[in-house]
Amino acid sequence: MSAESATARNTSPTYDLRAVRTFRYAVGTTLAVALAMGVDWVLSYLTPMLALTFLAPPAQRPNPKMLVGFIGIVAVASMAGVAMSGAILMYPVAFLLVEGLILFLLFYRHARGAPPMLTMWLMIAVTVIPVVALQSMDLTLAVARGLVVGSAVAMAVVWLAYVLIPDPADAEPGAPSRASPKEKPAPPSSDICMSRAAVNTIVVFPVVAMFLYLGLTSVLILVFVALLSMQPDIATGKRAGKALIVGNLMGGVAAIIVFELLVMVPELLFLLLLTLIVGLWFGGRLFSETPTGPLFGQAFSTMLLVVLSATSAFGEADAKAWTRVLQITVAVVYLVAAHAAVRSLIGKSERSNATT
Image 1 (cartoon, rainbow, N blue to C red):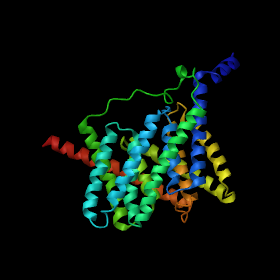
Image 2: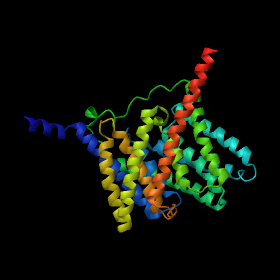
Image 3: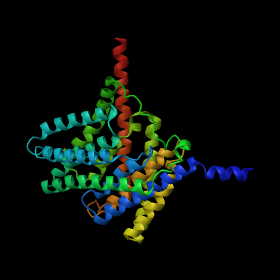
Image 4: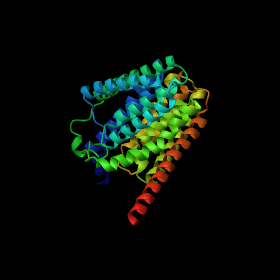
């Protein structure tokens, strides 16, 4: 009886759908890594990160209009970042004020339900491009082109992954809740969205200002701050903040292991093999119904960001993997602690006003 039930469980639509989506998650990411590291343009290591947002739960096949429209918006955002960069050296104070306003508007639209992939990539464009402009306008143009090329390659990879590895036609009825598309919840009220946007801006703006004022060039950290600031869990409380820290620490440990293996076998094919194996392992847990599933998705993203930035010709190859992990851990702890502190101050202010 138990053998029969186990066989039924392993051949059920739910099991097939999880397996298919896990396989597509790992294969699609590996293909994105192959193109990004094989061609290796400026900021190519961000391409697999973008592809992951379409391959991770809730896994839905995007339509061509969405893919083409996304590339167009990234192109417009990149051109806007270049245009803004022209004013950074001549009018630094005015630029910081405009940058703060743009951050607030992006966080507000994100809270109102704008597509997460869109707001995330716009955030990267308006934060990274101006910082790069402090080094060279030629490099700024290269970064802008790299973002557009990266978005186009990522969309092509996502489309191909869904064509080559589609969902089973009969699997949807038994799909797990996390892997299946969910109804889009109603957006929060305007006041709540403005409050969330204000908190996020207060937390992220000092980081961007510090990079601009001090002339820091570690784009990886700024990219990570931009990516993490768009995570909905970052502002939902201490438990979610701790989970975010744990997920990134898991990814950091995995990155150090993978990086050390690549030091011994510095070959692209070996990197692709490791990406596929690690993607299958993390993906299998990401698409499970366990509460810890999302941690593995965050860990895989962190691992890829650290490893690919270290192995890319346009990355920051002078830093060790463990140094990047330490920097990213500091960034995560700062974001979580700063969100908690700002929320606490706002809560005390509101209670004080209510009693007076």
